[in-house]
Image 1 (cartoon, helix red, strand yellow):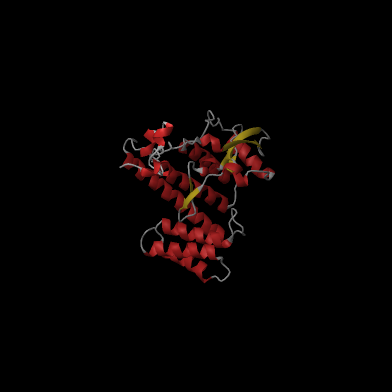
Image 2 (cartoon, helix red, strand yellow):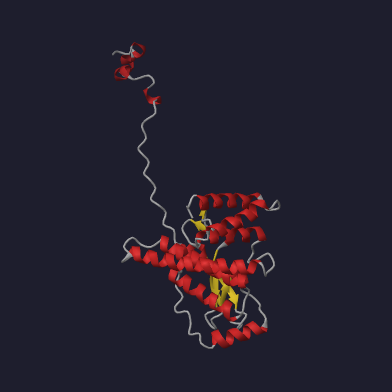
Length: 282
């Protein structure tokens, strides 16, 4: 169709312009589809800091892997027994401090000065037989982490630590076993059997943690392993539920819901836990 508006441009040598679409240049051109970003490869080592520690048993200084405070990973979800699941890394793998010289190991929050009687026990029963942790890897796999937690657990027994401290280590070993089970490679030989073995070991650790916390609840003061009474009550309820003690779990959740001083966050957790137990989901 002739564009009469632009007729007459021939005299200026612009006759070809007569058929221009007046507003064509303002129409949005279809942009090429943006290329999808490739997933960013996350290196577990990027989350880690080599922190200098001094052993209270042998006075040696050594480097300990810990999570950088400025690079704490994103929280994705939380299991009923308070295990937190983070993106890109299982932070629990780095919760133990292990002296590579004398074999003393404990959870990060309990690593520090101790009575001379405990030091003597560790030197006699741990250090005298300790042969080392092996070569230090850049990052810990689940087996590395579990081995260090088991060393910490042996130390809690030898130094006659509080029952709650022993139970706390058992709980974290259970969490690591769960993490290992949930992250088994698809090509793991006899994967189903391996999962069953890990689940059985996890449940055993949960039962030991349950028994320890229940014993400590009536004998120790709060806070217990950094937890107040309400949180500890909830944890015991969750551990009872996870280990098949349904009625006992409901009894402990009732304690929380009946307590007028318990904060709403813990009460909400208790209500959710009670629903899971009643519905047979835990």
